[in-house]
Amino acid sequence: MENIVFPQGFLWGAATAAFQVEGATDVDGRTDSIWDEFCRQPGKVVGGDCGEPAADHYRRFEQDVAMMADLGLKAYRFSIAWPRVRPDGGKVNQAGLDFYKRLVDSLLAHDIAPWPTLYHWDLPQKLEEVGGWANRDTAFRFADYAAATVEALGDRVSTWTTMNEPWCSAFLGYAGGIHAPGRTEPEAAVAAVHHLLLAHGLATDTIRSAQPDAKVGITLNMYPIIPVNPDDPGDIDVARRLDGLQQRIFLDPLLRGEYPADIVEDLEPFGFSAHVKPGDLDIISAPLDMLGVNYYTEHYVSSTPDGDAGPSPWVGVQHASFPPRDAPITDMGWEVRPDGLTTVLLRVHNDYPRLPLYITENGAAFRDDFSGTGAIDDVDRTGFIASHLRAAHTAIEAGVDLRGYFCWSLLDNFEWAEGYAKRFGIVHVDYDTQIRTPKMSARWYSRVAKDNALVAVS
Ligand code: FCB
Image 1 (cartoon, rainbow, N blue to C red):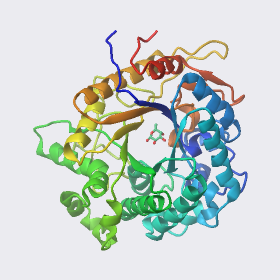
Image 2: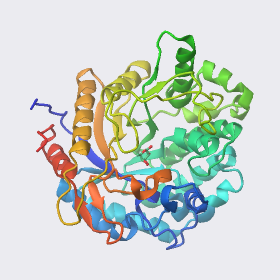
Image 3: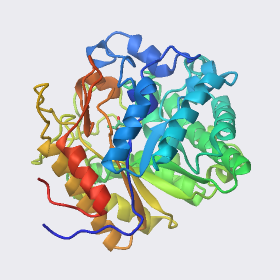
Image 4: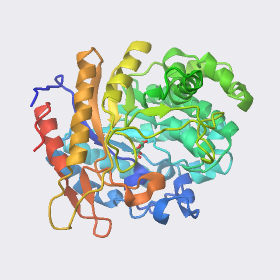
């Protein structure tokens, strides 16, 4: 096997998110998030699944942290639940903060760096009832929540991520309707884009004022968006437009202090620029210490109508399609395209002011063969991670300042609209007994982390 060694100090971790793993949705003062409410609506989540029991991480975090330490992981990316810290978006709830103090203390005791994300999609339902992310005021409520969290944890946490994948929150949640809050209002989605970014900027300022030496970043989901027919002007324009909606509408204001002009024009019929007030872009473009990149696959897009595909998450574009190609696919139906990871890393490196990059999510759902007694030899997942680490290393060799990798996910968990049927964990969770079983991928990844190098899959 090739000798692929990562730079010294490369950070090896694993990721989860509060609603996907914690369970315990009605304890210690937590109130509903938009996902609790979404799950109650018939037909929204496969199997009628909800945030219970998830991986019962709220009660079993000590065991999970010890397991991470055994695996040799050096960082844990988790998210903090806004509805625990400020239930209903209102007063600070000490019991909610205390849970995260215990979690962080346990991580530090095991020499694992805590990497909290403040927002991984669990907006308090009460804030949704007054407009959610379509309401500018939500950005200010987010900054209040960030302030309370940093005040409580700033002495223990040195690296903060404001948000995870605002694209999903805005477009899947408010235009496509397939994520909470399940709205299909393109005008609300474009308002949400700006308010999520404003919330990020306000929270960044809040964190820096409270904790001047903190490192602050944001995580975006990135995909190469490629026209199916590179000679077809319709396909080329759809690719431009979707790349703009997926990537540039976030990267440009964050890293250049401006929205991309072509996308602002595309979104004018939906009232986008009316939401952008004087001074907002200065807040949004506050310098960052790192950018998190989540990578899963590539998108091939065409202007050919898909038939009646339902409400489109792509505001103003009804007919983008993602035709299957000749590539292996995961249990999510996503193509395995490791080269796309090199592409997105190089794109940020080449097109934007340089800053340290971290892969904050990468991984795959596959059907695991688990009899309940034996080991899980998840060769596909192991191979997926190995091929993407190779692609990440290629980017490093090309000069990209990539500093770490977090596999998604540490544990099997609640995969949003797909419920518990899709398993992304490197550790298997039996949802009846809550028994954890590290899969082959976990054992292999552990060796990679300990060696700081790719090792043969065995
Ligand atoms: C990402 C999400 C994460 C997980 C993976 C599979 O978009 O951030 O919570 O669901 O996809």
